[in-house]
Length: 214
Length: 292
Image (cartoon, rainbow over all chains, first blue to last red; front, side, top):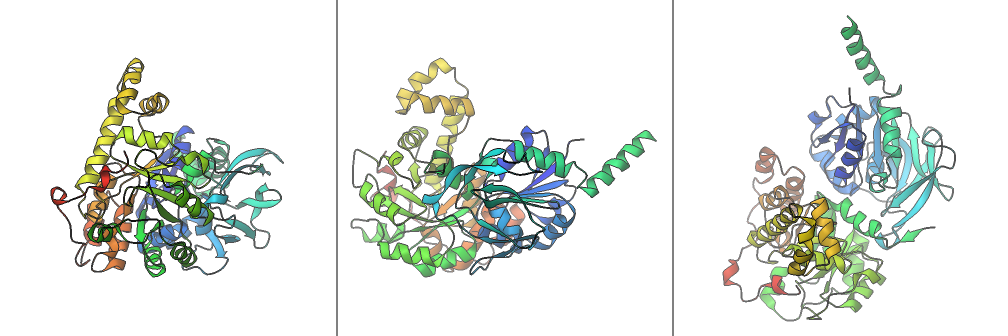
């Protein structure tokens, strides 16, 4: 049974995430309204403009359903997606935050577009081997400041955190969906969506398997 | 180790803008209204196209002071326009750290033969096109994002529709061709063979393509999205309408939910008067004919 992965499709690079998941043989659905979260095994929140996404989340009543989803099911958030999940934002902000991930973020923390860059990032277990390199694409990227110890740093750039894992939430300030490298999407599918971390899906799979053996 | 200004980073920002609405603004106050409505970026300019058309005269890059004020007012990307071929206006905008430069036919062209060599810049460029050949010429000059030209300031979507359909038709035609035929097609389109071959193989443009020029209502935005646009620019359509804040918000919602007629109906309710529209055949000057 192929895992069913949703991609939040309010605005931004949602097609790129969908393409990566399809290459990995997942069943992909676009999510624009609350009801479309039903039946998903996991969700990606893509890069885009976090203020735009925030407004649309609010206007179409997605904040509460999404928070509920993220307490039980795996979520992979990149760039703007990371901001949406964050606990707080540095400076003034009128956008709604889901406050699921124990980090503070600084929007455009690496500067405006002329400072956007590509650079290898260093992965850390369990996302990769210690020091394993991954092509990082940073576009007006946010900076991450972990609050406490629940959000574990799993990707770094010159000693600075650029990727965190907290329970069933994986978030990066860079864009693996633009890199052409499938490793992080594969990690999300294999270890988070289909892995033991996804209690709901395990229960469903067990139920289906036991009904089939019967 | 850090590489800036790469094609991936330039076209990557355009990918992040997809499914969004980029709004023309002339003041910090308008920029705040646009951001509050959910715009994914704003375009800073001195006068909106409808006013440029009505008032005439030479239209130039916006005052750097205005651009600074707009940059300080919002946290979303700020774009700004330069005249076709005016690479010094582009150097100035790069020094101001605008996030995207629109080399635009809406302003008075500075060079009738040459566009800006966009490869020499760290800041990415968006350009307008009416057909595939024009789009590929701009991409060969280094454009990292495209948009239809449409007919700016007209409040009439017919030209944007024509340009979007033409580009899509030509892509479909290329995709069905024998590779041997692509050399002659490249000559016919006036575009590099390498890009023509890429389009034929991938059945797509190598960069994001937005709709622009004449979009005035939520229905116009959704029409362009259903025709295959990656997102929309709205120029005069918002701040020349009766109730800019409500219209801006409605166009943002319509661009996300372009496939849902029920939501489109709901967001289109009670927006007041749209901007006045112009019949294309009555226009003295067609901005789209500048810089091919």
